[in-house]
Image (cartoon, rainbow, N blue to C red; front, side):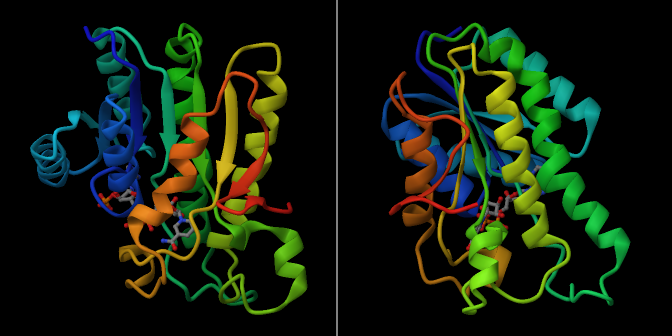
Length: 240
Ligand SMILES: NC(=O)c1ccc[n+]([C@@H]2O[C@H](COP(=O)([O-])OP(=O)(O)OC[C@H]3O[C@@H](n4cnc5c(N)ncnc54)[C@H](OP(=O)(O)O)[C@@H]3O)[C@@H](O)[C@H]2O)c1
């Protein structure tokens, strides 16, 4: 068991999640690399360790109850958890125009981006409640901002019945959790990393994964009097 501040980052084997793990590790934290594929997870853990991070692997598929329960048991065995970063996410592809979208794709995206987050939070809350300064960070996206979508200025991506609404839904549950946890020391917020070059968008993003990780690291390290139930990007609050 380690006395160090301990974080779990879901989907940490690549992209923004990997850089969040690297950034939290650079603070001297112990970092659980949540990933569903054994080889990809172990490769990321090795790479992080080579960079000096106290990283450990956490087998984790956020859509699978048994996998999430096993991850919670593994963390319980290690002794404590202070910070949970719900980073794992999928787009479901971008053939999602209204009237043509496949309901099966929408279900899969919501299962990962929303219900997966709920599943992981609910399984890990007992551990987080025991921490002195617990933080939960949900990787959202400004494409889920109804205000920005309504501006219709092309900044919220292509028409989307699955990905963008899944992030709106994620923002909604972030507020619900914040209300339910308002009498605890747990701060829970949603963060947008900006448009980052990763597999998620065929590397068309304009920011680096390291730049994208910054908002999650900021929200993971908020002081005890920091905000909860908010939605932020590097420049400040994002309108709902
Ligand atoms: N890139 C952007 O421009 C952008 C903008 C706004 C928000 N975001 C959000 O930022 C987060 C990270 O995105 P990214 O761009 O870094 O994407 P990415 O490179 O595609 O990485 C996504 C990560 O999520 C994991 N994942 C997917 N489904 C999972 C599941 N069921 N269980 C566990 N892990 C799962 C993937 O694992 P595998 O390797 O096994 O597939 C991968 O590690 C996502 O929530 C995304 O919506 C990204």
